Length: 250
Image (cartoon, rainbow, N blue to C red; front, side, top):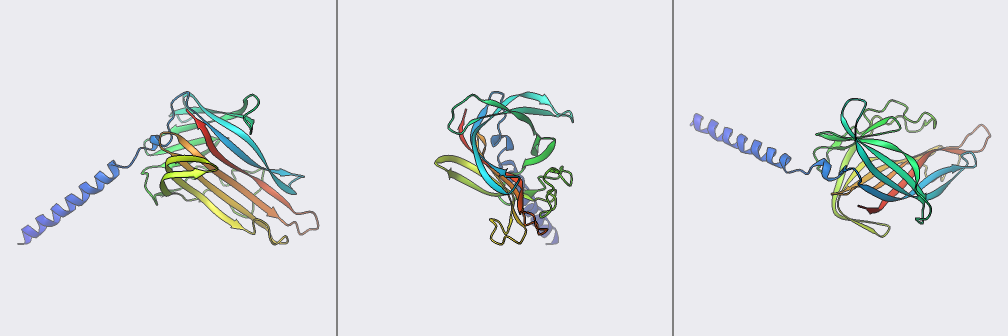
């Protein structure tokens, strides 16, 4: 009887193990949500939050932004990567495209990294499953944006990225997308928009959405602090913010 019980226990464990392996095998590939063929492009509408009047106020500037996969290269760690060129033009689509710099994407077996302005982020991490989380800013140093001298929110290394949800459809500003994963990066606010002028405040909002066979379709990335400046000078803001969503792709 004892041997029979041991056999049944072993069989149940084996079936559970096989089921678990099958589940992981059936999760989708990261590359399905960030395809990187040379020549592929995505055009976005971009709303950029800008500081004006020496940081005393904020206003939004709008553009069209195009990301174009240029070619496969090797990154500084010797890994296969892709160079992505950025181009800007007027929000209404008029005017010539102007060069707006470049960045790099490194697709690995279990994660996809983006290197921009010498900052390395882990944007996607296997498996694609709701609730799966990872330290997306783990490669950042303690003060990744020294020019802004952020004080209220500390450093970014501890942000916990996670797959918040999967949606079969997603609508934004009249644009419709299918099969979308949402990656939540950070969502925190304090006295922002400012309702108490004598108290510091600010907001961090970082979220991205990826559509199957297309790539990044939506991004919001805002880090803004409000400083009341109790020494008698005018209050001011520091930081930046963008909201972008796809309007065209090939």
